[in-house]
Image (cartoon, rainbow, N blue to C red):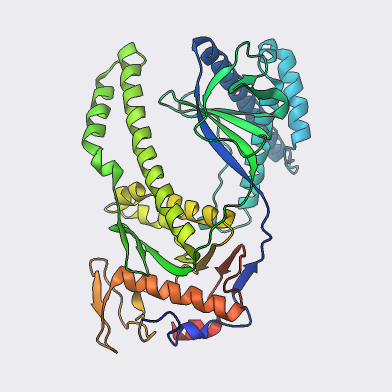
Length: 430
């Protein structure tokens, strides 16, 4: 099928821009995070643990105080006040006066912990304005000493000299594995510790946009069997990294359960299990980065659906496979890579667009609902046998191509075209 051929249904997309939101973009340098591995010695690990614990203590104490203030306001019938950074900083000063050991760590790290709590509250109250199904942030929770640990420093609390990282109040520099060069001087850093005991540092730098010169317009259909299917007929199977390591994962979990809690052997078994989980996660992220980079570099526009992958978790037969596929993470990588590129755009069709039920030749919709096991179907109008995933990808490509034509944005860089609710004409056809 030629690219210029547009099915009749796609021509119903309103040229006036009804139901379409276009956000123009001027290509500017972006702030990006650059992640490197740290190799602290024994003394440096103890110092980092002290910073982790101090930031965690400050965050939890501030959160507990805000919860108590909220309860008192509700009991007195007054309106609860939103915790501002200024109020949290004042409380932090009193906390440091009562706990002198907080002066042993950089004050910037404690201030950033207070800022994190303010951001958490802002995200929570902002989410109350949207429907419950679309909320992404919940009420702030207390931080635990188990799991991921992190703290943030700004430029006045760290420096880089001779390939080593210097942190305020740390007597010795920390070794960094510089896997790539920083594009500019970092404005802040975040040091993380994973449950497996791995230390990493993420520098926030101003980076120039990535130059891409792709020419094709591609539609992408995502699924669980074939993780990505493109309108060119190319399929990327789901590697299922979790399923590959499931037997080993079960064995390590059983070994951990047999150990006496908090014993030396218990911590050894916990560390082995955490390393396997991290290995599975690294495999998944590495594969997703490679695939999304290839798609962005080769395309001028990528057309995808507004997918709610969390709905798949409600089906207990698909939940594990859906979690193993990492669809939300895949689409997130695809979107931010397209945003930072100079020659690629993302076009998102609205969530209920029936891409699988429309014939990509005639543009007519199938008069029945396809079952999940039906991977191919015959069009009753043109007798063409369609591969379900390829046909959906073709419909998405045609949809996006028609949007570019009607808005005059073909061969133009913009932030994206996000389709809202279907227009009245589309609703009648669908």
